[in-house]
Amino acid sequence: MSFRPPAIQSLSAGLLAAIVGFASSFAIVIQGLAASGANAAEATSGLMALSISMGLCAIVASLYTRIPVSIAWSTPGAALLASAGAPEGGFAAAVGAFIVCAVLIVLAGLIRPFGRAVAAIPAPLANAMLAGVLFGLCLAPVRAVAELPVSGLAIIATWAIAFRFARLYAVPLAMIMTFAIALYISGPIDLSSAELISLPILITPVFSIESMISIALPLFIVTMASQNIPGIAVLRAYGYQPNSGSLFTLSGVFSLLSAPFGGHAVNLAAITAAMCAGDDAHKDPGQRYWAAAAAGAVYILFGLFAGLVMTFVAATPSILIEAVAGLALLSAFAFSIGEATKAAGTRDSAIITFAVTASGVSFFGVSGAFWGLLAGGAFMALTKARSDT
Image 1: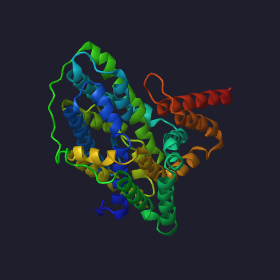
Image 2: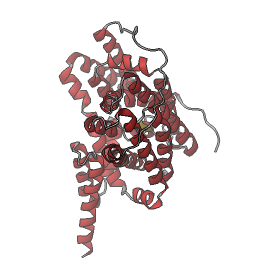
Image 3: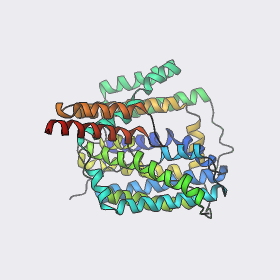
Image 4: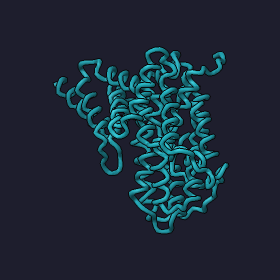
């Protein structure tokens, strides 16, 4: 296969995906690490380790497979940490649990029946799950107008006008408008207390039964069910055929590398995967992997300057970041819901998958994306069994 350099369109999509992926959930990661017993320096180290690990993982996976493999930290895993609290033994015990979780992810990728089960997810359900994942974020522009009317309308107007005359630049211009508004609202940003380059902190792990039960196993289940499986489903929804087992194993390896420095887990992404795998990343599906690789490079930079990045992003209202993401994902949502409901025979099952996923409910710490696939699959099996009788 001949080498083709990345297009500006792909680099722009990757930059936006990285900003959205980082800015939309870094606060949850910090909260989760702090709740697990990390002090400020350890939490920053964890954020740095996660950013660099998922950046390197995205670059390696995307360039090797020529598929837009987007990597993210485990946001539901961080939420789980925030609710679980610090284990006995403090953050060192949590780090021990992170290491065990990473090993379990590696092993899950090496078990072939698991990979075959993921590959067997019907395409209509995969698209419906993706639509459900995207739905809440696609509503963010409306919520932004309700919370910050002038700012929200300015961002939407910028996007709409650019979309009319130069669609390729619609989202980047909306993003520039967002940061301009943030600087206007917050005024000069105080960087006096921010470190130029963040420093990693090596944490000696402590392994305990309590941390294995309260953190390692739930974190593994949540990461696999809420992130890795939907991540594969998103790629399949866009027509790619990834080797799920090898990607799970690779994410587990990079999770293992980040764990001693305070990183809880990295995994396949779902929302940013849609940004890198869609038409906005490149008209040629075979060239969209550059978007995911570009996002990985930006993640590495975010990791190196984690302290500064946290200062800048914290100055931007989160609803405005979400609004830009929602605008960027409207086309992906339209595509996925259209593909999900195209076939009459699977339409009801797809709608059930979409409804459960979009509801945002979680059971046992596992998000609606997994339960949506399970509910839609169960209904599909039921209706198929009835038609066969």
